[in-house]
Length: 430
View: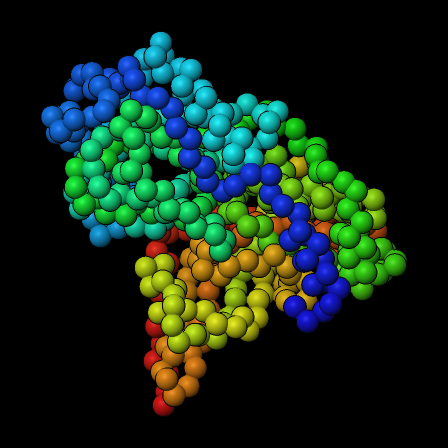
């Protein structure tokens, strides 16, 4: 990012803070609560050893999603589960506490206050001694799903900490230390990387829910004005919108979005804040904004230490970014309607908001190992959503909104990224 004008836009957007966090924990009293499970009966909390064993006898090994497949691999996920359809909560004792827990978590995550937020039960999970779940992202089951809610039922256990990561931030929730007279409501955005550390003693029991947001207003709701951002965009594109110095600006979002979930109203937390600001300022300056899905290719040097082989990240970690190139598809205009878009590639000179490379859900990675005598190299490919700013009236703008210059690109084939990326290791010649 050598161009000082695009770096200025990047700084202006970075200063716009999210309204909430990427994860949150809330507690409610557990007195009088319990769950009813088909085939087991009524289970009171705190859950004792006999009740835990009864749940285990009625449970099945937990699978995990790998692209469009469902797999079982105890090296990735080792836990037991009971389908949500078999689990029932008595609304006479649960409703108030559950509503408070969901509301507190929703507000802490910065979900839109004027939207309808609901939680849909997925399953009851049991982690016994040695059970764990490796770092992964949850699958958004439909376009309205924004976050995951875990309701931890009190029981005696050790270990089983939940680690949630987003960007360069990470929070560890030591749920074993929770009081036995409380239930814990743990929420986080669905695309956040999270893991369950091994349980070392006892039984960890939890209910998992999808948090759905509906009825949100799609109109920008940013707190303006934004003189810094306006000045930065004007400097980047130049004084004449119809003849800009650059045809477009591409800002890669922090959160991950599927093709079916990409919409203005569905943007999460900081992404929503920055997109709203860009839409407000762009309208004032004579620019149009679009959403699109990017197929991104990045190249790096390899550092000597660090990395996360479990995610296919080189054992030497990522070093200096050597370059980035992307193509865009699945275009959506400012009114939320599909539009033609274009398949021209964008590179470092027009792309900002690149973020932490270790957090991207790569569908492929390759690297040449660091040898000690000479440095290595790494590449990764991933899908990421973006907001694209284009000066209105320019030739590029006419192509994107449906001019005759280029045919419409083929629709993207979207697939959920796997828990572990495919890794290709190449030997470096000496």
